[in-house]
Length: 254
Length: 254
DNA sequence: GAGTGGTCTAGACCACGGA
DNA sequence: CCGTGGTCTAGACCACTCG
Image (cartoon, rainbow over all chains, first blue to last red; front, side, top):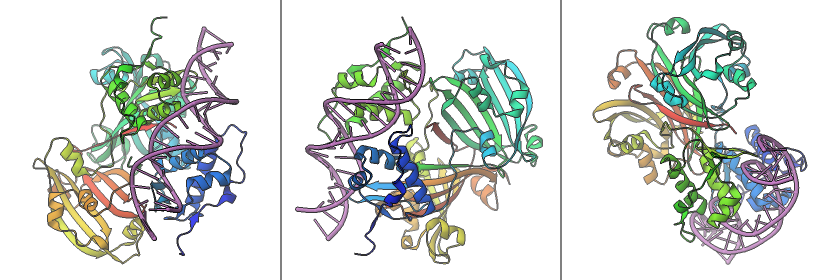
């Protein structure tokens, strides 16, 4: 019957590097993702089955499965046993919440982020901060409060707590780079983050700093970040101007 | 040296069902997750290497890898080449954003959710709704507006648009079950959801419905849901009382 | 019954980190 | 150097869906 065709634009996969450092599953996955986003493989289309794809590409089935799984996890494909693999109808392009800092987020969207450091001091850890950072209550931690703007418009007020060993981070570093960028220079990279997103009214000087109405709504995030070894290295309490920032996520049922 | 021990409480894995319908990787993964959350394997601990685990359990390495990968994706473990696998220090228990309805969320936390249907009618699809649902602009869609409460306190105002084929859903069904529950009865299950989380001031009758201050802050979600075949079957615009609801997520760097 | 994805095995070689 | 996880192969059997 017409309409039962399966898709597999094999010509898109002619240039796979079998020797280079880039994993094969990743090469397949990214090419497939591009083809879907470009509409070369239309929404709702059915892909060829895994075995056939593996043969056409001269790869093993597990490699193909892994490539496809990447896109299933991203919400671009759905798989059903006995049926096949289909493209999700998600024309609406959504930029995902990635594990990047707000600074990078803003810089990546062709804006010019800037930072003003409001507070930069050593304080004893409260019980809450100590619990999140995994340090003793009352021990020295670094407290930062920053105002983040883009193109001159304030976007967020960022409060952060770091373990005492980061006391030597300077105001100048913080005003020219994002916090995660500074930490990366010191060999600390973010690997896992647990966060809670909510809303409340602006408090104290927040309305002034964000240039919004007194007591106006703000979007809030509480985030604990962990490094490569699973150690907590940052606890942040942030508030955002809701007309300047929002979070986009894709959820996939398991 | 002391402190270099690796952990693997093999006794926890004595009862694996090799013949049943539950996948082996899933059995290993859930037992391991329980052991981590119970503290049997402490935060920061290093696991034995994959080959040794596979031998001890009489399973293949790919099966063990998959079990571990599940927990890496959940943010409970981190893996580093040349180093090993370690438990993340995430004592703070966080309930994750799952692909469940608000109704189930509330019911699962030992509360009694209730729903009042405010509007239930057929309307022509606006351009925005049509784009999200993948139907023609102006075609008939079902419009629902509901007030959701828990233990008598209002939590959210839910606006939803569904394809016209769901016109026969009754008010009674919606007041006794969650929307996704009703749809599941009709063979539609949610598989992927794309959503945007933000904040704004309460508008029109929302403050009254949520029993908050006029123009007070609300947490907002815009969600498009897709079924097993990748077809959009629901577009929702919801607002939540921020003191009653927030979102928790875990992000893992790839 | 034919076709699909879901699981599992038993190896192999490589890249990276540390001693 | 060794130990670790990262990738890849070439099969196998099963469970599910459909005609």
